[in-house]
Length: 132
Length: 499
Figure 1 (spheres, helix red, strand yellow):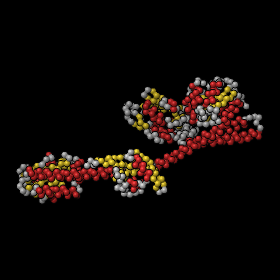
Figure 2 (spheres, helix red, strand yellow; figure 1 turned 60 degrees about the vertical axis):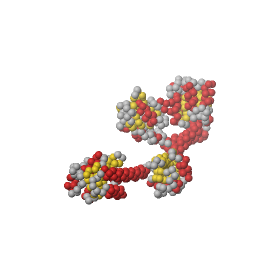
Figure 3 (tube, rainbow over the protein chains, first blue to last red; figure 1 turned 90 degrees about the horizontal axis):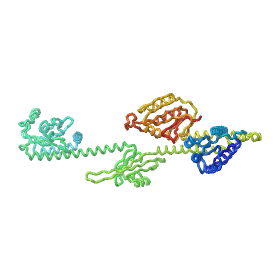
Figure 4 (cartoon, helix red, strand yellow; figure 1 turned 180 degrees about the vertical axis):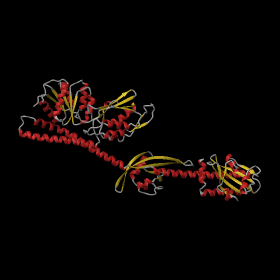
């Protein structure tokens, strides 16, 4: 089963993504800030991370830098209310991480399309995508 | 030459003419002469002018002219020294003059008028009544000539002073702001009409500053600022606040007696309009930031509402009654999402940021107009179907474009880009596949013109490039420019919005 880590400092958004990915057949972990992301990564392997940028504690852009520094290669979906941050994300991750960018509130169908593309691109063939 | 011209004008002064006439009469009297003449040099024509004449021929000779070098007076003017000639006709002088006028010249004595080492005229006495002119007569005339020269010099200085005063007044009056020149004791020595308009007071020269500017805070600031620096202050006029900038500087004057006088120059500029515009701009920006912030903040709570209602409405085993309710919640949250997007667009208009639109743009037209914007610049262009190549000085281009594009336009699309490529001395700017966007480059309004070196000659030949013109052209065609700040030196992109 594919495993996803969702990081956002808003509990209701974490809840949404948790339910959404569970319905899609994922195993879901959540992190309320950038520090927790680090902790979770040291414990588990993930096929995908869904990451907010403007979080309390450690900023999402720092998390992306840490991922690159540590040599993680798994795909990331950046989900933020601030569309203009895409440029910053691109600058940091260009050629180093496979990232898709969506703005809040996301259209869940579009979000799912991006997830599938990312997993396919990264040759992750776990059993996911069981629609309800 | 200018000195003599000035003297010509000065001697038009009635008082000076009277004074010179008195000295001339005195010369005639002391040297017991039949006639006397004061000549002034006209260097434009190289002539001596009979300026003041006394004696029997006065009426006829006044204003007449003789060539410098001609006769004894002419010789005196040319050589700058005195001459005594008794019985001049015998010596070859005055014969022609006597024949023309019927006058009988028996003796002549002439001395030059010298100011600052320059001969500016001649004083001449004619026909000594008490025998021949002697060396003693010459000495006396030279003393009188020195007196005349000194009077003329004084007149010249006074004229200069008066002219420089007029000049100063006209300079002060032509300055855009108000000017007050204060002496060390705090009296207003000079001011211009703008100050009188600002302070709504007339005839302020000679008054103390506090009489015309009765604002303790401003006076305190002037004292504090001394003679260097500036401050802003508000003056309430007709129930309305007007904002002024006070700029203080100093000037020194050393009098002829060596006393040093210090003056404080106060420049007063009306900045009310600037302040109000700034305030308006600030309010506009604050408003736009608030709306933008609101739009972003609304996105966060909207995310679970929209997302969870979307999931719920798709649940097959969800009771029909509740499904209907959830669909209503989901529909309403979609409407809210649309409103939040519009709110962000409004904020972008307010803050002059880019808004995405979906219109076609004629790329070739854009390229043509960009090229025409570079018309006066010695750069090479070549235009492909979807490509513009500008070949120019690397340093200039990088500098200009860096300033042009580092304004923080960050939206980017994947497909379209313009690349700036550095190759040795040159930079190549490739514009590939424009797509439409509206852009307001208002932040460039204050970026006037860029300098660059002449790439053809390699000299530091300063020319100017009208970047705002390019901005206007791009703006007209709804083209947005964005830049990747990480590699700003080597690549930049003209991009479109959306997919």
